[in-house]
Image 1 (cartoon, one colour):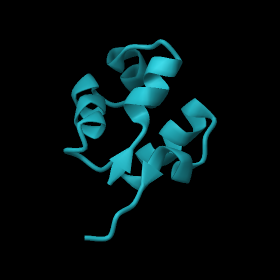
Image 2: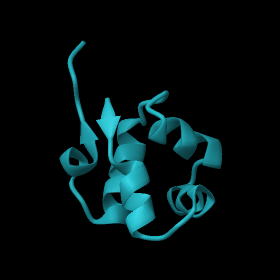
Image 3: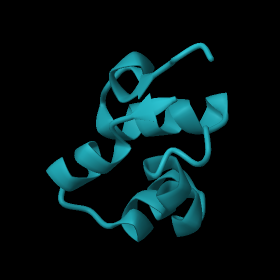
Image 4: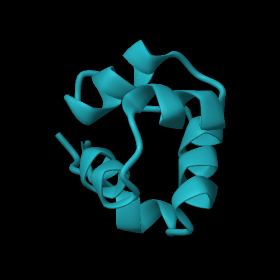
Length: 65
């Protein structure tokens, strides 16, 4: 799954740690999502959507393998 988390985080000028604290996960989780090594749970996807004021589809792009 491709995502725009790193780009959106940069646009908001926040660190991985800041974002992680805001959505109640570890910095390592944010790092893994940005590197596309981890797909977030639906709950976390909604938290990121709310944080960035974007729809889930604007943040994540699903590719059926």
